Amino acid sequence: MIFQINLLTATIVLVLYVSVSLILFVVGTYIMQTYASSKKWDDSFKIPYKINLIWLIISLAIGIPLSILLPENLLIDFVRFGANMIIGVILTTRYYKKNRVDTIQFTLVIQIVLFILAVIFGFIFGTLSLYVLSN
Image (tube, rainbow, N blue to C red):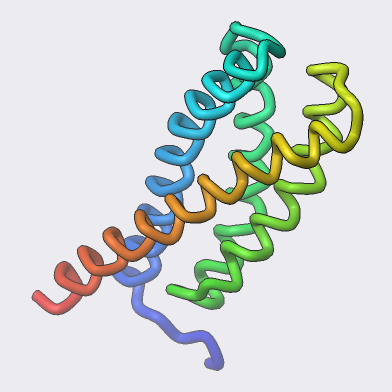
């Protein structure tokens, strides 16, 4: 087989990917709500929750197959970043009713922060998974 990994490795990769995605969902919702309220757009958690839930679904739909095929690859984060930017700009424009330039800047700031956090959490959890697999 070309992609031959054992069940334990696949399970750890899957659990780590889902864990990082859920952490980014919670943190992303908080960051988006804080940033939107600082811009005086909206103070509720409803819109950030909706947008981050869609980002979570997209991240899992893209990331799970890619993380099994390409474990520990930064390409997954870049693909997720691009998809989330496109969807984020569309949803932010729709929900916040702002012009395209403001929503691109808003989405870009949030995605850059989430991208950095994804790399950091991915590194931490990847190191932990190497420790678990080596024992």
